[in-house]
Length: 236
Image (tube, rainbow, N blue to C red; front, side, top):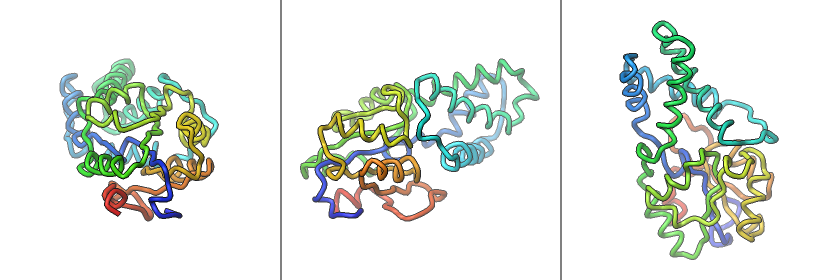
């Protein structure tokens, strides 16, 4: 952070791998595949999840000018699932249509509230920050199910605004999504601190909009410097 926390009026957050995660993703995918008579080891699925996320999400040079829609979000994630299925040798058992349909199903499974869990530090930290008078918001690349997920996990009421890529047609790392969030909140860029896990989406992009940002490091493969818990903000 470039300023003391009290210098900000609001703290906005990324969601995936910042506030919540699907901790049993490999087991969930293993079950979905097994229901379709494709049996693969959970550890292998987990390794490929990490590999795919590094390649398609964390390692990809994203286009700030790319537009976003529910359809484009589904396509992005289906490509990840198709990559994993390919590495699992699904084509030995399934035809192209079966792989396509399974990828559709996986998208629906992984965008539903049921399997998401908050990180342990989230609820307490949000409550403490709200009690300290900070306005809290969300700017997230996510499926249109995000509001339902936040409500289901008991934290949706903390956030105003909630700006979701698939609802507004803008997607991080386009700085315009952050400018839209400022407009909706009625705040200046210098009033806001942003917290997220992705170097380009959550550090570069808000910086381009004039917003200070801090990286949260949730996993061993997250490189660089930052905080490791929201408690470093809420209790700092």
